[in-house]
Image 1 (cartoon, rainbow, N blue to C red):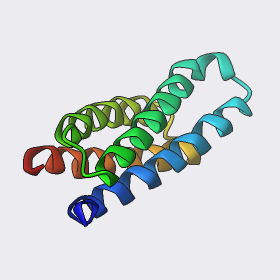
Image 2 (spheres, rainbow, N blue to C red; image 1 turned 180 degrees about the horizontal axis):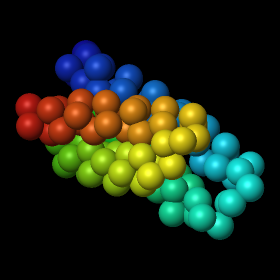
Image 3 (cartoon, rainbow, N blue to C red; image 1 turned 135 degrees about the horizontal axis):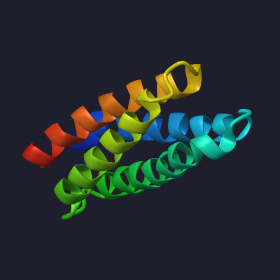
Image 4 (cartoon, rainbow, N blue to C red; image 1 turned 180 degrees about the vertical axis):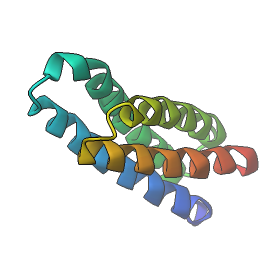
Length: 112
């Protein structure tokens, strides 16, 4: 099956999307929500792109390399923002998941 070639990356994308959604929701419950708007926005964008990347890879899609590169870029942006708020556990965990996913996606983009 074509998706088996992408399985590690699909797993990383799915995990990252879940953690990004959790981070966004957790940020909405923080006292200084206004200061977290960029973090929330990037969490939601990253989760959406991770979900899309996982879907395209599960199809063995022709655009897998391109969407993996886009996903790596989105994950790195999200990680950079979450690292600014690493004193909050949900942002720290999100940054870690995003960095892992970005690395996996960048490798996949090179070899897809």
